[in-house]
Length: 241
Image (cartoon, rainbow, N blue to C red; front, side, top):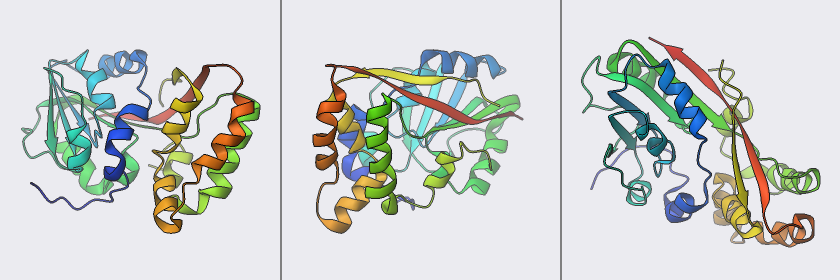
C-alpha cells in the first residue's frame, strides 16, 4: 500500500472509467513515436487505467506508466511491454537520460507542473520528446451536443474542479497534429462515459442525486440511431529536450 498526495476525482469510479473512457487513435501514437529519438522507453505520467500506455506499447520496447491512484492501477489492462507503477509527477525508477518520450494524456492539468517539468528534464535523453494532450467536450449531432453542452455548463458546471479550465483552453497557457478520437457508441455507452466526468462525481457527492439520469431521458429521442459517431478533438503541447 502506498500513500501519494494528489487530487483524486476518479478512484471511486475506476472500474467504470476503464470501460467508459475513449481510447486514442493509433495515428496519435505513430506521430508521437516519430518525434522520439528512439523507441526504447516511454514514460506515461498520470496513466489512469492505461488508455495511452497501451497505445505507446505498439511503438516502444518498454512503457513505464505511473499513476497515483491505486484503484485506477487495479483496473489497468496488462500488457507485456507496459509496467504500471504508483507515482504522481515523479518517476524515481527511471534513470537520468533514459527516456525517449514522456506523455501525459488528459492528466497534465492535475499536475504540479514545475515538479513534473523538472522530472521530464531529468529522465529525457538528448532530443527526447514530451507530449501533453487533452480533450474537452465530445461532438455527436447538433441536437445532442446542445443537450450535453447545457448539462456540462449549467447542471454540473459549478462542480467542475478549477483545473478543468486548462482542458477548455487546450493547454494553450502551459503545435500538435490535428487529430481526434472517434468511437461509435450506443446511448448507454455514451451515458456511462458522462458518469466518469469529475464534475458528475462531485455533483453526486454534494447533492446526493445522479444528474445524468434526467439528461439521459432527454437524449433518448435525440439519439435516434442505435449507434452514434462520437468525436473528441485532441489538443495539446509537444516539445523536445
